[in-house]
Picture 1: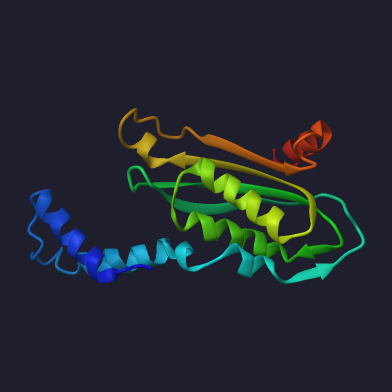
Picture 2: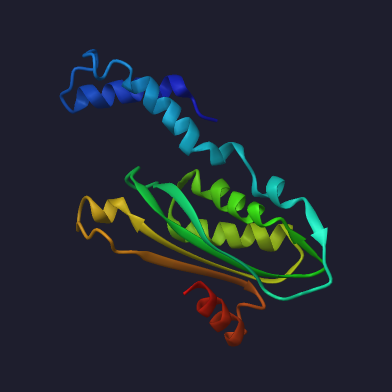
Length: 184
């Protein structure tokens, strides 16, 4: 999906647009470097959560499974500035579980796209609910947005928190409280 040639042209125009000399030694290779960077940090377009969640293992237990503090980095689609933080995912399995690393890979699939945090949180929850047999899923994402920290209001260190609940987590206050206690 990434067209590195177009990105290189765009970055050269950007450099010229801000008054820089795109041919000076320090900048001559910048368009190529930026294109490679975008290929890496936007690799989620060429990946799917389904691929990571398809291999499961049978279990007889059906208690909550929680993977917390999954670090991620993403790009805000409004300003093309980073937002970064942690995702916490809980689910209650029915007959099968997925390898724990696959939850982190699911976060990466959606974080490595132009995003808004609210949508990303829901996408993670929906992918797990759709691709695993679960009684329910809960996802909490907390992130600092550079579009808030370094421009505009300039409130560095502030965090945005988004939550998505599916299945039994939607109506079971005790489950949600347990989730919050475990991630604090």
